[in-house]
Length: 113
Length: 114
Image 1 (cartoon, rainbow over the protein chains, first blue to last red):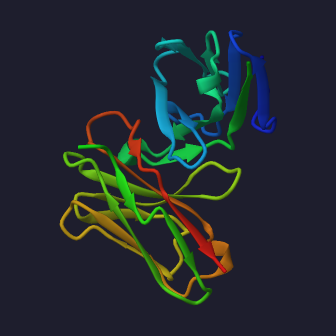
Image 2: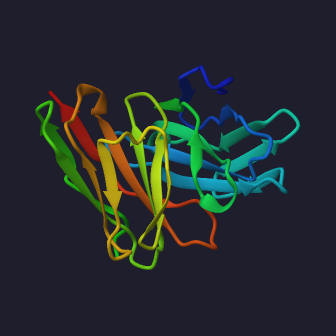
């Protein structure tokens, strides 16, 4: 399953399928991007990050793709599991070395067993 | 060290009252951030500290809000004369400057103003 844009709030996928969550960021000068996972009642949890000098980075079951030309970021989750159900946020570092992050609206991922 | 700790987890207060939240960051982290998150939205930056110095404040941080980090360790966020619009989750995060900015968030304090 795949989400499109920042304004599709929910992505529903079957357990075992791959998920793709998309994000459009705002500032072409942003140099660092992060994906966070947030479960109900908890703070955001770091998943994976990527710097602007890269276009792809892989982690365990997750891959982040960065397309600076169109200011687009995506998170791919392989073999989605019920424990992946959460809200996913992309965030960009927009102001140099302050570390201040601007978060997108978020996508809810629902994994059906 | 078990991560970033925030207290209380939940706070219900009457409009007009003052409230104070506490954040204990990861001990070796010298940067501490406060964010606010309303239902269905991503976190919004409020302010941040490097050691004990408050280096930036968002326009969201009205005069009723004040944050301190007196000894460069824990931080407090106080809201005076609370309004219903202050109801939100207040998140604290910490990191070590010079590293990446994938900082560690606490579980937040959920404020409800009635």
